[in-house]
Length: 58
Image 1 (cartoon, rainbow, N blue to C red):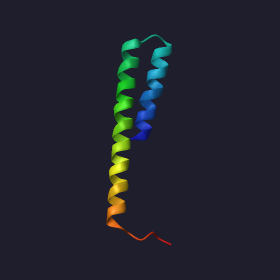
Image 2 (image 1 turned 45 degrees about the vertical axis):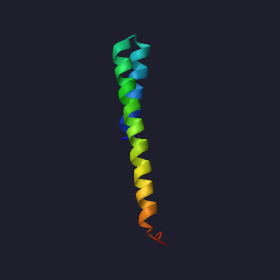
Image 3 (image 1 turned 120 degrees about the horizontal axis):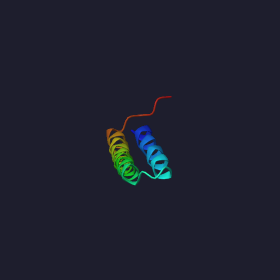
Image 4 (image 1 turned 30 degrees about the horizontal axis):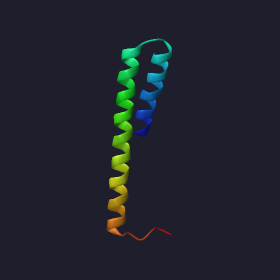
């Protein structure tokens, strides 16, 4: 998911360089949504991992 956010961010930068403002804004907003979704899912999985209390593998 983080790769998709990065891909949309790169598309937004390239579109902005070439003057496609609408496409750049759309790609930037999609990248922002995907990034925040990634952060939320990461934090949820981190909390679940801490709550389950598994011993780390050696």
